[in-house]
Length: 164
Image 1: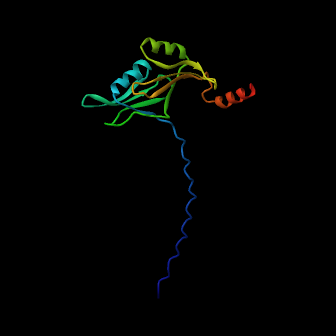
Image 2 (image 1 turned 60 degrees about the vertical axis):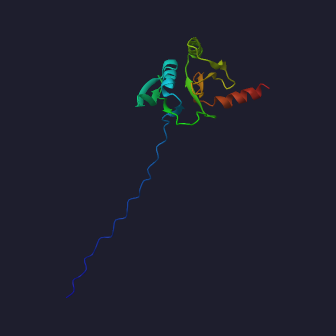
Image 3 (image 1 turned 90 degrees about the vertical axis):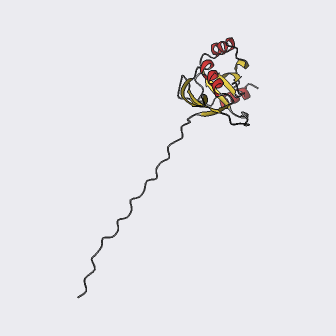
């Protein structure tokens, strides 16, 4: 007599998979290419007050360094420029914020730093000063007076349009 086939349980339906929600991006750092990392390190640490958190040396010279702003979580990395490469970075500007903008700029001038623009109140309500780092990367020093995360440009434009 042939054996009866065993009844097999129906395969369990697969649980509905929950799509993993992608976590939002966090800005990590900006990479700044330099002809001379050691010179740039002095500029960003001695003049702008950033603190070195990491450094990689090759043949005794720093070719990479990572710096942390004294306030907040902002970091930049300095990286040795490759042979024949350009430091041109049209369209990119580094921003550093300080409530003591005028005093900070005066201290830079006293140390021989050339400001391409002295602190000036801009139409959008922020006060800006500009300078270049040793490789010509443009830097904005500014104070937004609490308006950094607000739509100040839009508000300023509306206000200017009403005053015409």
